[in-house]
Length: 497
Image (cartoon, rainbow, N blue to C red; front, side, top):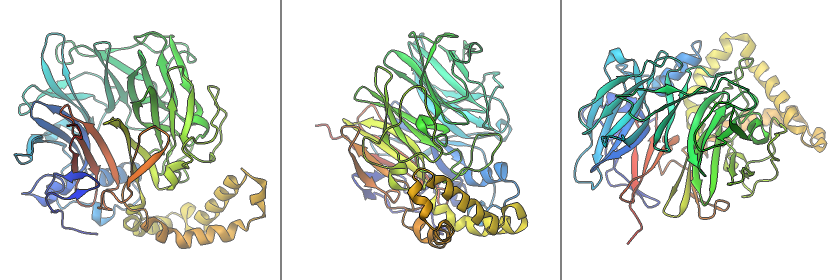
């Protein structure tokens, strides 16, 4: 892996210009810059674009979720510093990146998973950034000038982070997530002024058939309703309010059971385009499951669905389900686009971003392919030291998995499954090499998709397109996830005359 994180300034790729001469922003400290490996959130205020980072995500995730596995050296910083940062850049390009906030150690904040600009009923405009903390404790920071930040302790201890805050009907709505997935409740809070009024919990503890359930990953205001997309074992669910504002026992289930595949446990992204709500799915942590009875999930690319204003949903991209379900809300059917799961690439585990811009819908993925070479020594050592996970058992699991997949058509029973499994393992490394870097696609009609890039905009170490942010002056900003060199930010200038 490359150790140099200084990239060529003014790099242009597919109409996008790279505006981070140094990956991870910090030109004076390469080790610190590399630890800013996710552009986790974006917002704007005045003349500036703001980026909230996440720190050392693979390093921290492996230690937290797989403590028995050794972290590959390429993900281990020289001096571990897990405290999130916020950087800003003048939108006209006349200045340099400057750090405007560094989370203090005592805050326990590894990054800022969501940022938003909001004007209170009293007329105060500020940027708010939602912290991800190491313990259940929801904290936001706030700035009215982009340089001076105050800490807002919400007193909410039902989770450790939020992925989504949305304005709906003049109020803010915030979904709170637990650190560990599973059979969580839906924690939804509302506020008109986070600093002065705090947050009020919306009571959803009623009839389970009339209220959202599971951790809410996505909130969206669409078609005069508030929507929430929730992670659940057996497949994600999409709910909406029956009325304009949320009330207990007054919600409608719009999509259930993972839109026909139980492995679609997480609804990772959402966007509105041409009177449709688009939902992109994900495999939790790329290899895991939120089912408390299991630990790992077989590899699968994301699915993409869309929902119209009458609550009818359709599969836009996705193949034969690996773990078929029978939704009560509709039928999976064939993909409108003809694209299979992951847009034909099983390493595209997340549809990470969906965003309308300039009359087109953009979509960005997370692909785990480039981390495979780095993980092989750790996985091999893990397999050797943990007999239930040794190579023979892995081969047996792969064979059983293929047999399960082949049940979709009895014709496949004639195939030599063991031989297929062996050849799959032998060719796996060669396969993933061809898919390094995130995918980036766009569409004019929501059905027919055009490929922009499948190699992380020319940098295969960009394994995720983490942010798509259209600014008020007509630019589209991209923030990447790059655990090898530090994140990048790119911009597309407006096409408007």
